[in-house]
Length: 205
Image (cartoon, rainbow, N blue to C red; front, side):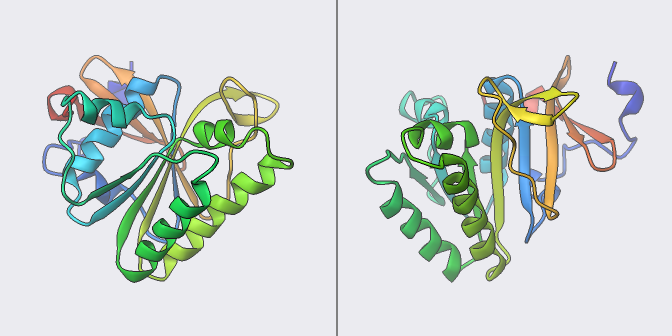
């Protein structure tokens, strides 16, 4: 079904996923199945040569590394925050991101809401954290990647699944929707309706 809309130049065999990201913008990765997200991020991490600051809030990626399904690369700094140490973890990430170019991965927005769900005005706290990461990244031309499990509601647009909380959107956000394809994962670039296929044989998982 998707193939009829895929560009002739959309073969990713020689293209690193980092090239699809944009600096000084919030790269929002949308998905309805966690394994689509895991496949995309595992390929992104594999491709990246610069440091990755990985905020693992749902522990799926950590599970793959612990089980040796994925190797933990030397340029990946993997953080597993709790509500108690989140402030310390964020400080370390902000310091690193302010010193050199990095890829900051927030995996996932749903997980960030979950660990802060007892806080008052949790929505404002979550938004402030994401905006602080995005602002810091601009000083070093870094990338911010935010993964969100979502569904589309006609009246509201993209909302987090299953909570229904609003997706964080800014004028400088770039949304990539992950969809299944028999050949692999379709990357639907929502702003311009272009689609590219990430072939299954290129996905490390």
